[in-house]
View 1 (cartoon, rainbow, N blue to C red):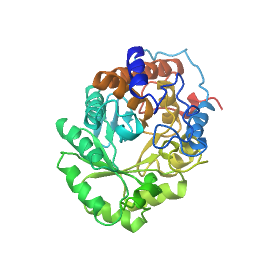
View 2: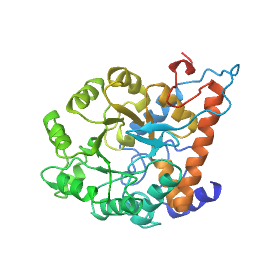
View 3: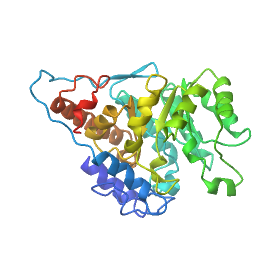
Length: 336
């Protein structure tokens, strides 16, 4: 990974410093770019929320080869980790590689590692087109996320996404406040429950709603019929002073665990962080910026190497907490 990070640091110069600790301090307010909006408080909150938790170390047990696999929306994954949907290489990451090289690396790397990558959306259109193309190259093994567009744009993109052979798609409703898109004549907006139901009823695909940060909205999403939610503040890039995902995850999971699949996204930097979020109620997690850096710095091999690192750290954390399986993680592994 050292070589991957060094290459990424050169290719992302001026957009991402590839810091030893990716905490948002060096890139405050750099949106576009890889930073957090405004003061960067929401970006920082994701890491701070995770850092508050400590593990109970337990070693009087017989867990030596923990099972890191999980079943996510009917598909078996080698690890409960997905690549978060991020796009816009040219204006967020420095343009050191082309958009389709990036999406090929993320989707191909995740498939090779036995898991799934997600693709982003935005303006210009080559952002979503590159993602759809990469998913099609991998026989539909990927999850495209479509922004909460107004009018017919959302449905046009959903129809195009289906042609890639997908069985699941998502909407990052947490992008609803991106005023820059409205200024470009491509408005996004919040969706009420009836609008969500209309989307769900329009297709047989499984539907993931990303950007749920309160118990009441988690319940509304479940009642609307979504298959999964992502507890996420959009990487701190849309609303300053939002709480971190780990701050709100447990309460949300307690409310809807038996109703929808739950993912958590924000501030994950290690396999230990993955295990913390599983203990707080997530079924799987998403990782964004670190996978983007790995893709820019090492293309598919970079993504594979990064996911291998995360898996190794996850196994180590499971052994040291006596956790047999990622599908059976107890809250008791966290120090009260």
